Image (cartoon, rainbow, N blue to C red; front, side, top):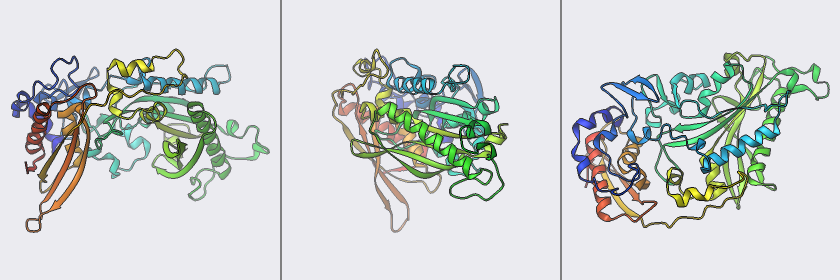
Length: 451
């Protein structure tokens, strides 16, 4: 699998580099479409079996599956780049929470953490959030592992336990998160999340409630669709009401008054009950965030056993694409001045409608191959295409599956759409990249080419 073979490519396939070295000539930025050196498949800074990342050293093992493509994004912190559209969304949310929620001494109730390291332990990313050991979200095919004990965080929730354990009871966390996923205009292996958490003591939750002094946060009962076994119904409903009111105010601040909102029941391992918020925007219902009442087991383990709370998480790219009408998630990584200058506004709440750049023509090529008898993971192929094609690749879709009636071997055919966001691609440029994808798929994934 690509997970275990990426580190070997620098020694195996130097020839992959030379065949397309001119794809991005004249561009100051290597990552936009240039044919990568073979060493691009290996982890950045790897010396022998050690990866140097953000000033720390991590031993490599058979869990390590980081490519240069993804590691080149670590530390970019788009959400902290002034006037970037993701920065604008973050600042608008932060300003709203600072103004709406004030502590006892006139200071903001919510602390904001937007520079926490994206390298976390697997315990932080999964176990602290009560995600079972056999849960499918832990799969190597869906995550970027530094090694068996460390990974690039898959969500900002990875920091919840630590911040609760430090004694915080109201905070926002903003940061880049990493997931191996399909390739299209809505998905990218790196995106940005904003996480919110608030805890309540008995006094805070029931103050102002009739006969509140007689109400309790906790009880021992049974779990139902409406509450956890340790929470009273009164406490659960008040926390749920505060959560939904808080988030309704937030999206109204972002999108304006008159917004239609609905709540959909869902499941998360670390909240119950859990909900997704959907908004009706231009006649279409869109899911914008997930939230719920925090699992008391998580809260207790962090040392806040006398409190009850809620949590929510939203994607900054998702909101920015809706608010600013940005059609392609790759644009957030663009350094094209025509894109960036549209978001240099004097007031972060100023309305911005993205004016599309000229859309250059696409070049479409298909690739077909027989799958190996075992260990084929589709996200390995997507990762390989991203590593070789970079942001030239707009979309990859599986368009045909075939099982041979005699050999029972399975064939996949993928359609790869190449499109540069800043210029027209030539057939020759794309042919070089596409050939490299074909060769790498055979060498690294063990497929049998049908090309």
